[in-house]
Length: 313
Image (cartoon, rainbow, N blue to C red; front, side, top):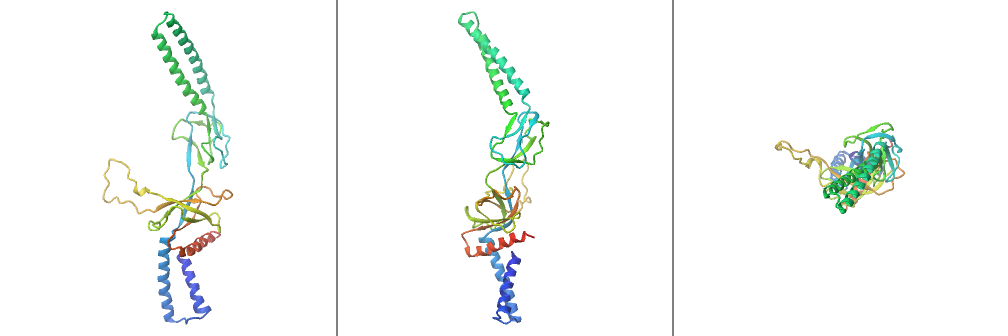
């Protein structure tokens, strides 16, 4: 940005002193021009950074979750393809259901027998030929078997895993024949939600004082030189990692000063980017146009376009 402003100022000097020859180019004019240039550029830099925040560390992010099998088993089928759009409810993969089906069939048979015995014991109790203890015992057996059957049916249903929402699977390495483990740390694939496109941007702490939710934003992704995308400011993170104090048995020392980190802003991309190659992790530059110092937004617009044009090289 400084180089751009210097080039602009040099262009003005060339126009005034050499092209139009409005003033003589002597020692006095050179000194005055240098002082004016330094002061003017410094003031512009301060005002632009305050009123029209800018960052070249923007990143397009997506929400993702690990897919973990709730029941162990051998994988029979993985019908999904990586980086292919999925709808909510599409099958991700299937585990061999036979061991769980056997368990369900066994419990259904035991439950049927227990229900028959419960009915017989109730009939005997009515005829005063049985005991209340037998009825209560068989009723307990029926209730326990029903609960076991519900769990077994849930396990059987978990042998087929479905997409939790619209999105896609990326970096897919799961293949038929693999064995899944019922362990929260044993994820078999990563599912990325196909929600709205959000850009996270770190800003210097003195740059967001005038930024407000809904402010217009321009985004220049590195993957598309010369293309500017429109968006708006969603919010500014209310807390950063430097502010987090985790509970522990150790007292915080006076020398343990947290680092002076940036503040994070979330940007929503308004333009339709469905036809663009913008995977999660795409980087770029972001300019926020606040209601303060609107005249300076012209310079900021030129600067962000200058940034994206440089990406051609």
